[in-house]
Length: 240
Ligand SMILES: Cc1cc2nc3c(=O)[nH]c(=O)nc-3n(C[C@H](O)[C@H](O)[C@H](O)COP(=O)(O)OP(=O)(O)OC[C@H]3O[C@@H](n4cnc5c(N)ncnc54)[C@H](O)[C@@H]3O)c2cc1C
Image 1 (cartoon, rainbow, N blue to C red):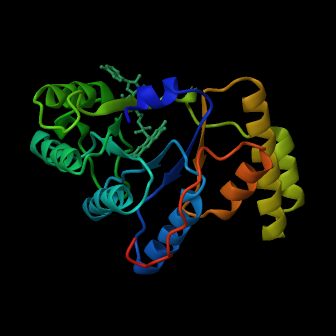
Image 2 (image 1 turned 120 degrees about the vertical axis):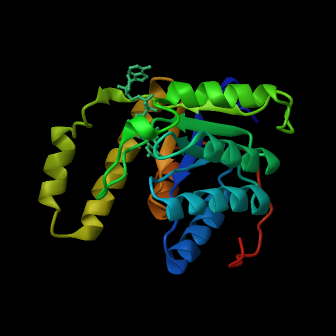
């Protein structure tokens, strides 16, 4: 479903973010997380995109696996950084063939630890990538006659870095020697934030799961939100 239809379909939406795992062990752990979160029937899940070649393939693979093996609706992040037009064209064709409904088009973070010349990128900003995907949509290649739904990023505190509330920092300092306490402080604070957002009629809440399900499930279960629909339990398999 297009992201605009998802948002228009009634708020608030709930969604989860994953990043591509780098090792077989991390992949197993992520697939377990995905199975555990699948039953919450989020409106969509998103998969981040790195700057390096190998992690990029992992994003494409993970997106297709989620699409083909689960009931979740994956939205891949796609960035301008270090890409030619032909590469972007190949990626969006692959996503169209896999019936991926949406793409989050981003400028992208520069690669770390190596020289990077932004002027060599085929697309300089997210807006250029959006224009390219829109042109692709007109080609009729995507199984949906409208093509991809396209999302873009917005930074709530412009882009100078998030400020941590003093209350949260103090609580973390008090518990810094006890990792379990730190986790509880985080969950409690996130829960308060979610309640505040819901009370103020936010359109949606996106959970950065960090590829783990525990904190997200604890928070979600404490919000008193009915599950959207029940999903048949599936056997946990390693070939998600
Ligand atoms: C929700 C979210 C998810 C993200 N996921 C990822 C991810 O998976 N991978 C990743 O690498 N990064 C990710 N990022 C980071 C993001 O790609 C970078 O921070 C990027 O610098 C900003 O993204 P953008 O799409 O707004 O970039 P851009 O559109 O390139 O904007 C960057 C800056 O350029 C300015 N600008 C834009 N267009 C023009 C123009 N025509 N002329 C002059 N100035 C212009 C903007 O105002 C802004 O200050 C994410 C960010 C968010 C908020």
